Image (cartoon, rainbow, N blue to C red; front, side, top):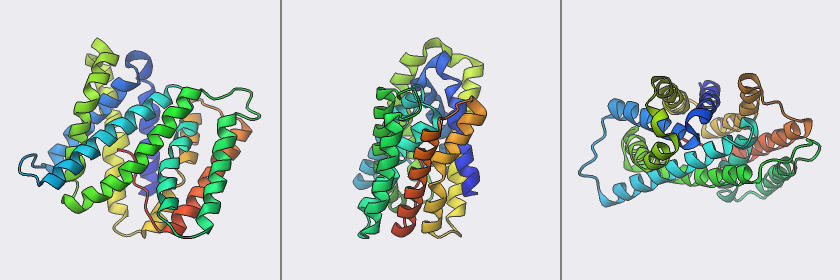
Length: 277
């Protein structure tokens, strides 16, 4: 179920890139977020009124973080191959795992990941340097992914089931609306675009969360975290198969270094790495 969730969310990202020429990345985020918010709110039926002040603050921070993370990530996807963008973004969960650990070996894993990132960012041997703005956006998305992990853990203690996620997704939809409507214009009203946006929301949010929640009932968090570290590699494979985004050998090696470092750090820290919504 975890592997299926990883494939689903990266398949959703690949599908989202097909919207970029028509609507732009921001509209893709908006359509994905709105569709996911509607489905999650119908399923969990959260109560928006009567929340305690701490719960309101958490839901607001959760929603804003989701909006910023996904806007930055989709903008990076418009400039970078899928596997490369996800590799840079995965620095967020890796950073949370390393900073939350007291094991000296984890700093070795962090060094290995840093070597992979430097190799990837430098474009050594690939013959084509990566887009600098795309790299910056992916790293920024990683920062917000790290923040998301901490905030979502708090939401899990404050809200029953997935109600906190549903409320945060609705808040995120409100924040992404201006960017999506301005960026997409009249094109976001096209039935084909709306259908694709719903598909992205289901693949990137609804299915992965459902599978991961169920998988965590029987998997240790350390095993879950190691499986999640496969995400950059799966993203590179889906980018190649679905989008024809071939990678140079050095880029494959760099992604491999990050995957190995993430697996080591996440296993030793014993922490799970929830995905972006």
